[in-house]
Length: 383
Image 1: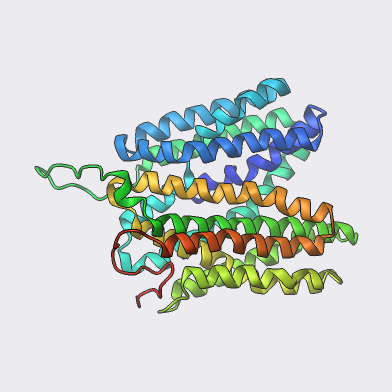
Image 2: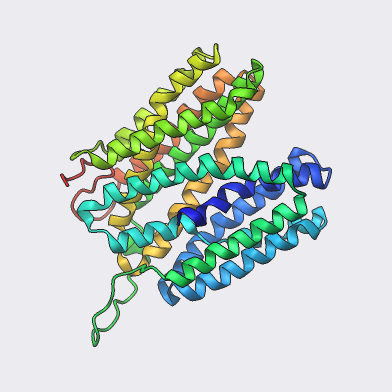
């Protein structure tokens, strides 16, 4: 799954560079295509997840893998208008490596060990974001855009084939002679607690994308764009360290508290824009909470999701996190454009708090009794 996530971290920057340099269009046009792919992923994730629940892993991965490979191989041969038109359906057919990894872990790992497993999964995400975009930029600047996008398609197809070949379990095995569990009705599992947890996760991604955008804007404003790679690497390393601690301690902070600290710690970062190394240092505390917050969200969703609809629920989680990304970029970008990068950090934290607060309110106003507390908004049990 680490390999399967690598091309997903490359596709955004590669598509942007291709549209701008290869097709001679502006960044707005590139953003339109990128937004189409992201929107398609958000729309398609629950549907693909439901297909996993109904048909199993191999048929769905085969269809999605073929579709994604065909899109990226054909992309450098399409005019801009056609590229924009097929962006949404191409996104809908993407192999959901993230939600698939979470399903596999929920199946293979006992409840009491899931915090450690999902912390490790969050760490692997940080590793892919440290490697993927840089490798993609190096490839497209060294080789032609046509070759690079085609190679990305082959990479998508290759990783999909590996998943198909390994065929990891995505739901608990059914004993011979025992009828398969019936699909539970929607209202029985789409509860206030689940929706609240998903909204908190969406707020987390709002904060993260806003923080990254504000960091880039601050470094650019002060002529320090050359150290961007180092600053982002330190941010990722801090998140990895936080994920290690979260996964190894016997008792972790609740999801709500982690999200609150993540958002509050980023608000004052804009007060220390210079020198660049000071900005890097003040970004460490909020990034220490990045992987733990994501891991706590995933752990809670896996506990709340009935096994029979786990794929659909993980797909919903993908949709909510992508919505956080999609909303965060323009909102924080607007704040930066009409004030300064320092206000971008404040907008990131406060905006994330607004979304998370809506989730917490929804969680507390559940209409029906639910199972015992889970580690999302109550303390995690000792492992």
